Image (cartoon, rainbow, N blue to C red; front, top):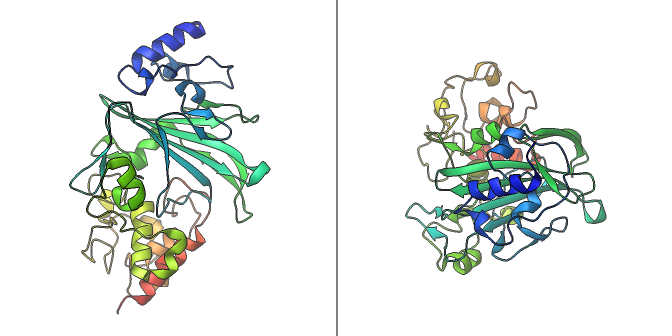
Length: 337
């Protein structure tokens, strides 16, 4: 068994040129649980605290160069509160590209913590880290201990019992490292899917990129969605919750659906499109989206299911998003027949 010092040294070498280059990156702490030995050998930090992202992990207080951000329309994850941060190495910066997306320099870390409960009852459940290395993005899941003092690398994922904000008791799933690729995979590479320019505020973009790129602030702010039309709300929801898989080059590209915000072909969005390989997931229905008839639309049928062979999305939730399904229902109802 290697010593803690040797493991930290190996990790530092493996992550050289990335966020590990920070002087405060590795700080020895007590172990909080079992980790995957292979991952440690590969040099990945086995404790979240070893990154130095937070001055107070339990309080989610960011360290220097770790910047909080929020999304206009967030991805639904059983109603979990999400605390999002980005670390960019000194001397480097994020830049907008011509597609309205953001290019993150090598060394960037995207950090997302999932929590349930409020006030003193709030419990941190997991923190997911995306590290941008020279070879590409690496996805790492960390699970918080019961004492809320640190989180341990959980390559195999985890299951735990939580109560959602709606009062529903569920078995919450922390994805394993390979499952991260199912949502973050595009053309066989791991990519970020949340912080797109169109899903961030103009104020944050101006402060952190120096500009508000074309196409930014187009997705609705979810808590203010009542001021927007049904199509804008539903399309924003589908772009954030579904399009990372349902787009060309992604894991569900064989479905023929392309639910990205920029897609304007009704057939690609599912309108009167027959399913390609839905199987029993279609529920006996004939078309992905039937204008004016949400109850005959496979898209909504699958969103309203918790059956593992039917439910969409397949990963990332164990409960039905009532607000999201209502937004999609209204959009379909208002489509001209």
